Amino acid sequence: MDILFKETGRLHDTVEEILRYAKGRPQEREEALEPLAAVAHHVGALLERQLREKQVHFFLPENDEARHLLVESAKFSQILLNLGLNALEAVDPGGRIWLLAENGADGGWRIAVCDDGPGVPEAEKERIFEPFYSGKGDGTGLGLLISRKIVESYGGSLRATDRPGGGACFEILLPPKNGADLGQAG
Image (cartoon, rainbow, N blue to C red):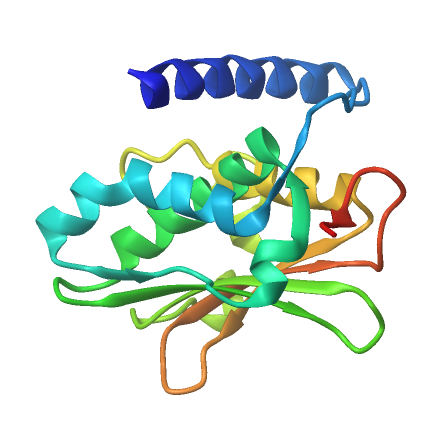
């Protein structure tokens, strides 16, 4: 029930954010910070049924970076859920999805959702971020757009790349500590 209530609130916030985006209004930031590892585990719990049905292995970050990077829970849940669902759809049964987090030499952050699916064709790597563009029959074409806009609101970027060995990676690159929005836990 706790997950259901939390997700209902997150969906409400997402709808509000879409409406603010459509009206061109900036988003307010008043959300509590939570370690990326905790947010990733929450997203893993949300995807658990689909992962189990498709027999896909989802590897979560267990490194210190993921435990020390503090992020706004609802916003990063939305991003990671969008990327995780896309990866889940791309991989074959028995496939693998990884969520990675690492601190860069410049003090910035790289968070990536990678899979061992077919990858993203070069011609599609930017187009998939366009509004209402979807390669899925039932897709809205808003998930990646919203995710990119959230990441950009932190001064970062979201891009599709190739995973060494095959598959796709969606990389979130965040600048060094961005005011009160991102921080490190003690």
